[in-house]
Amino acid sequence: MSIIEARNIQRSFDEIKVLSGLDIDVKKGEFLAITGRSGVGKSTLLAILGTHDLDHGGSLSIADTSTDGLSPSELAALRRDYLGFVFQDFHLLPALTAIENVILPTVFSGGNLEIARAQAFEVLDKLSVRADETPTSLLSRGERQRVAVARGLVNRPSVLLADEPSASLDEESEKTLFDLLDDLRRQQNFALIAVVHSTGVLSRADRILELKGGVLHEVL
Ligand SMILES: Nc1ncnc2c1ncn2[C@@H]1O[C@H](COP(=O)(O)OP(=O)(O)OP(=O)(O)O)[C@@H](O)[C@H]1O
Ligand SMILES: [Mg+2]
Image (cartoon, rainbow, N blue to C red; front, side, top):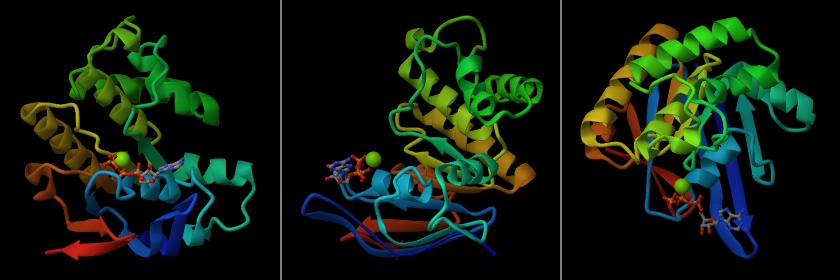
């Protein structure tokens, strides 16, 4: 059973073709690792799968709903109900605390803030980020990365799209993060699509796909 289905995805910037007819099926609950050289289009692909970038060719379905022709508010509802994101450059609001950043998607989507706050405290605690009054601008890069992960999880998504979520972490913190993601995936059965490079993390994935020449290749 697929939670995301994309067919013949194409994306160019000016004259440069980055994605050229890419297909992908993401099964419920699976951990799909995406790898590939810098500049090959991994972040571009995640932005398309997450419906942040709509300027692409081909078709995309999320939870059996085609994104083609949806209004901005229908797309926002689809994102709210199914998707969580961890951006490569975090996209945190620097003046806000960790908790405030984590519950921000819930504020925007009009969800239950009490539940979101409780979940935010729990996930930040598991990721060893202190949930106090410190603005995130004063946190270390690795701490900010973990806040970004916690924010991606707070709405209990069906799919977490994570762009190099452990790039700023040491080996032990990376293991802690992926142990937590494994635990949560078992409890909540969300699919994890993560751009990853480290062999330790790649070995945990159900499938590894390499982006090369504008399309995905299965890595054995
Ligand atoms: N908005 C944009 N305008 C112009 N070019 C862009 C835009 N976004 C991405 N690109 C180009 O598309 C290509 C793919 O970029 P992308 O960020 O997806 O690569 P990546 O695989 O995520 O790289 P990295 O591993 O360094 O994060 C790059 O050549 C980049 O310059
Ligand atoms: Mg990238």
